Image (tube, rainbow, N blue to C red; front, side):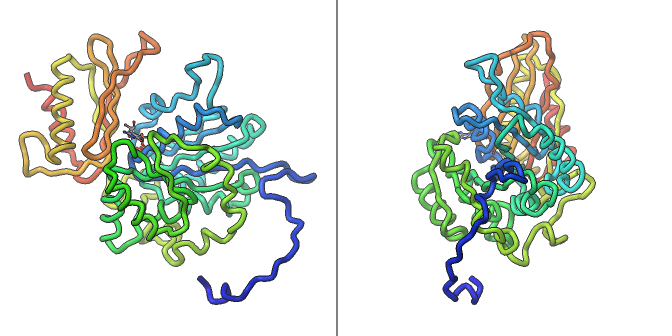
Length: 383
Ligand SMILES: Nc1nc2c(ncn2[C@@H]2O[C@H](COP(=O)(O)OP(=O)(O)OP(=O)(O)O)[C@@H](O)[C@H]2O)c(=O)[nH]1
């Protein structure tokens, strides 16, 4: 707290209209909620949940993915309502794939969002999902400060989804570095925390996680959730920044990721593949025979559960997140979703019998060198 905060402020009458409300001269700004949270915490699951709820909004979605996984995400974020074929759940869908939104907003991203805003009559709420590696502060502050964007868009709030299973470990590891790493910034910037995966997290882990979050952000409301299920009144229309306009100027003062070249480690040519030594790798997967699909599963299991390449225990690697899609030669399609050692492979219902899938596995983590790709390809070729 600044020392002059100790003076008791005088109450003054204000005629300022409610933020976001239309005036005679200015149309209503469209509220924007940022959904942040570390890799695999459940951001897309929350997004999908919001889109399928009856909330009365016409929602535009902006997604920013790390790694070339937009098409896999597209399988998960179904923007049409399955219960009503004619109904669109999302009015507009803007992908800012494999790039850093806070960098691209300055150039191509800003243009894309401005273009989106030209269709503003068609939607009345925007949900923006950041990459799991993003610091939401600079993204939020751009919506706050950018003259063009902030005329049209009202930053409503930052929702942080924390992984109930791996979140504590992530935050502790990040704290141990002595730096304000992304997971800490995500929690620190949040207006509400969703402690997700409450169905599979150990109760004592959840309690410890809550105490740790409280140390980082003492006043933030914390809600335990399963698959992102939450009363939407708790996360939408918060108007969190209408009351504290200088939040992003003061939060983490002196450590702003955007202002510090040391912290903002992204490569500014659009290839944001290096953040805290975390890289992404895309491995193409051909159409598989049944036994090859089994070998793929064995390979994934060894890498995720044992943390090394199959057959070479000394060659360790750390996969934080994996996603994939591939086709088996009988036509079935499988989608892989993994967060650290937890993963699931499920069969995808085919919507178009003719479309062949460009199979791939995308890994995000540390130690992803060429030999990882060779190892997977070799294991698929084994008789
Ligand atoms: N058991 C359980 N699984 C969950 C829950 N929420 C999400 N998942 C699963 O966790 C995995 C990751 O969820 P996503 O919603 O894709 O996570 P994300 O944060 O969007 O991932 P990135 O965009 O890669 O950072 C998926 O397999 C989900 O089905 C939950 O509450 N409980």
